[in-house]
Image (cartoon, rainbow, N blue to C red; front, side, top):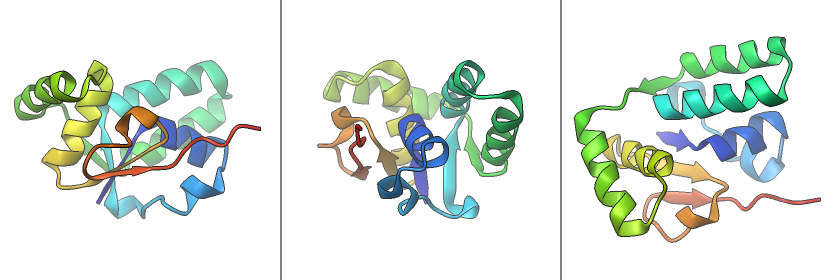
Length: 124
């Protein structure tokens, strides 16, 4: 299973960056923390048209959606402290650990962490 960070959603699904697209799992193995749903909806509502936004969010809702539980929240607090992660990123990472998934991301601050597949953004 694979948790796909918001940055990887944007690079892979929206910008079609091939380095990310080749890493994306099948829908049945795609883990979506609810905080990623929120971040993705926020970004899409700002940057994309309504039809594309609806399509992407509908797809996300058909993946393995993982709610923020007390266990994930407490782990996230520790990961935030230990790895100096912002709150949302700590929740995303804790969700990956809790679900025994890898984390696909384009954010460099995850690069040194276990269970992370880091794909740098390609800037034009």
